[in-house]
Amino acid sequence: MSKKHNKKKNKQTVSEQLSQEVVDARLTPNPLNHVFMDEETLRLALVTAQYALRATRQESPPSSNQPTGLLVLVNGMEQAGKGSAVKQLRQWVDPRLLKVEATIGYPPLAYQPLWQAHTKAMPRHGDVMVYFGNWYADLLHQVMLMATQYKEASDAQHDTATKRHFQSLPDKGWQDYLSEQLVALKSFEDDLALNQTKLLKCWFHIDAETLKKRLTDKEADPAYLYQIDWSDSEVLEQFNQVAAVLLQQQDDWVVIDGSDKDKATTLFCHEVLEAMQTALIASRPIDDNNQQVKDDTCISSDTTQQTICTPVPFELAKISEQLTDIDDDNIDKAKYRKQLKDKQERLAKLLRARGGRHVVFAFEGMDAAGKGGAIKRLVAPLDPREYQVYNIGAPMLYELQHPYLWRFWTRLPNEQTDRISRIAIFDRTWYGRVLVERVEQFATDRQWQRAYEEINRFEADLMAAGTLVIKYWLVIDDDEQLKRFEAREKTPHKQFKLTDDDWRNREKWSEYLQAAADMLARTDTEVAPWHVIATNHKRVARLQVLDHAIEQLSAYANE
Image (cartoon, rainbow, N blue to C red):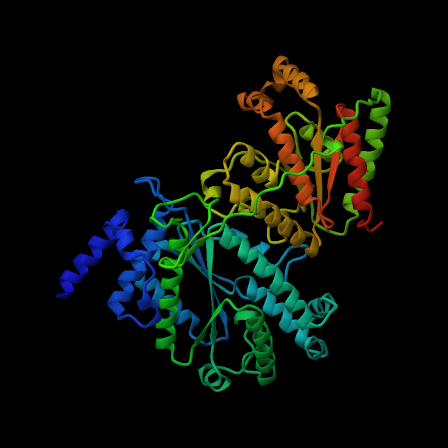
């Protein structure tokens, strides 16, 4: 076959790739992935897989696939062929559809999980992204500092800022720290995969002699990945010890021998192809008759290497009295105003004495339960530059093209930004998946049922990093909600708060009450407990919110 005919065929395949017949024919598990394809076959397979993944998020023609992306993490030793491999991949695929990001190792940012600084770089569903460095660069940089801190700290050449950093390193052995962080990162990555961002983790390795030959100078270069001096034999030996622990604890890394850069490049491209194909297959649930099924069923197919698991039957929680026994005690206006002023002053003082710690307030509750009013009183004594309030509604299209929690990850207080605020207040939160999305069937059973543990891990990561998470569930009874709806309807400046959906949701009061009971039963954790405010009186609710916030912050304030 002539080259001209080959080019024509390639072009035709790409232009027709949205055709279901073409996708079915080209994108099935390919045993040739386990041996090296010739260059032309590999290039065609890569481009076809790339476009087929992109097609999972296409709306026209409608795709039956669940939108799915691929995140390729590239790490390993310096001069091991990482750049050459990614450069070749970019030449063999459509470069417009391949996103490449790169970081070098930096110390973890204060009060943030290791992964948080990298969430904005996440690929959209349907895209392929290669990420050099990533959160593992930060982790390895930190571990290398810990492993060599005594040697480095004694070096008179280091400046005062560096010495301060040594003094702030975790007070534990690097092995324990590394192991703890790897467990947390693996859980984070598992949640990414469950939310349609599949991962391929590639570790490039060469021996010491090969590295020595490829280094062009013997001076430490801070631009190197992990910011270590690769020409220092002691540092290299230490790095290999760290890498060995990482690779032994996490068995999902693909180790690529970079001794021969051409072979390493070809192997890397084959691995990316297989990962794209596997991601595409995972986006297409099928049954034994090759028919698509909902993801809350369970089948296993040897021919497709695809398993869709049935969730364990969901056990409803008992609706506790704290959700139904609503307090009707009120407080007179004069006494309320005096207490409100005193508590607001106390809260503002505590927030400013917290030593820079990030604080996340999460407000949930029944419609018209008083979340907005409580938030208004919470922030009243603060400077607007000290906090951000996020009113969470239905997700935008670009947010739906990322993992579910992504739109909350990117709103967290972040040391990377120039914004001075380190307090985030959420009016509606990540709990929408197990509340409104569950009741209104915007999420499948599997999605909302697994969300409890995903949310628990998310909050536990924040708390472990030093962020304080304070959660409120505001409760009123059915009659009080009706009174507030009718009052809003008659008040011009409050009418915007009332929608047709609000009235419709009243018909599902019992369903929302059950969803709330299940949520509290499964996410009231030791590290991030719920505080239930159950009262029909707004003044009492506002004071109780302030009292609880003061109690929580008192333990962290530097008074």
